Length: 490
Image 1 (cartoon, rainbow, N blue to C red):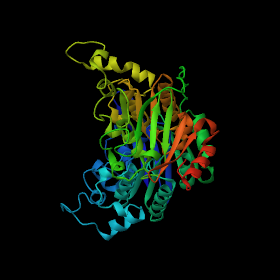
Image 2 (image 1 turned 45 degrees about the vertical axis):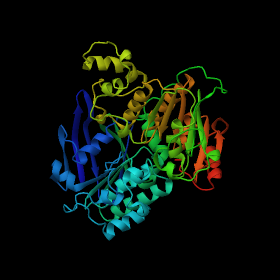
Image 3 (image 1 turned 90 degrees about the horizontal axis):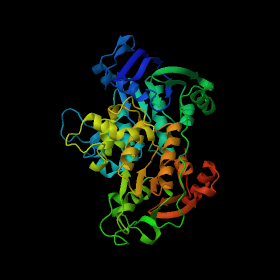
Image 4 (image 1 turned 90 degrees about the vertical axis):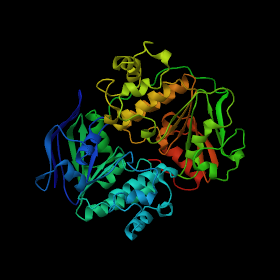
């Protein structure tokens, strides 16, 4: 049994955990739910031995665990994979094996990669693969550990439904082998499907628990809503819509030599693509979404869109699926935002830039984007995933772009934060900007998009008018018709 007893953790003035207590038992999968900023990620870091608690104890089989012992005992699948992009997929799994510089994959490694359906990419450099492969590699690293406790922190935010089901099977095997398994997730349907017990966290404390048949999507949503765990939805910011016939901000084609010059980034440059059949554009006043299976060309198309086919001078901002690629995690919220500002936009033109000056420059962004931080000097890496995503949005929009490119804008965030992010994107479009985004979750398209492009096999399979799709279920049916197969909509 793993026991967390009255654990406290404070970051400056922020009380991340306030006397939190819970137990994890063998032969069960424990679910942990709660809003962004509730303390879930902090709990994961403490369990993994990545940080030390300020008070309380963490014990396993009645033995108090030191940080070093936790690192040996606990394997974590992080929401943001902690991997080496300059190594191959297989090499990432064998880092630290016996001091061998280039160990050869063992049969166990090869078999696991095949089970996770990434065996054909074992020798690919990780940096050349999709975000889904990154997440599956992170899962494989954890599964290879001879650990007693396995913590899955939003492990499938970039995975398809089939890939998620395969991961759940691995979790059940660990449970049946007597391991302790913990799932931290915002996806209530999945939590109710796989977990035997669920605890809800708010403001750093456990505020509710469910067992067995009590665990349903409706009951989980009820406890999150009734106890305020989901937070309040932010109202949409009123702004006039730009005329629908406004000229394109930027247009991209999926093959070099089209309407733009130069090679396209990522793997799409290596694909054989019919430029006439693969193009998207950002239009002022509109949010354009692109969806489709990984490797089908949709994600790469979004990344390439602002680089080719443009006319005139266009200011762009880009937010990748991995927030670590666009934020300084070891710097403050204020420093992250102020680093994007033009010198003329700072409150003072003095030569010396002080912490106070950075805070003054960032204050309005923190307020407008509802970033939950005790003060502007809070380190970004200590924030919840949802608040990190809102910092990324604030940084991107601080440069006053004409066109915002964003991949998976609500990956790993709770329902309330999703609504806030949808409002931010919609407000930016209504103020005269343009948004082009790649989405795995069709909720993002329903929440704020005007059009949805369905891409597979490096071809646009169809374009849907989201306004004419009444709800998520209706849009999912239309997307499936365009793809001729199942697409992740949950």
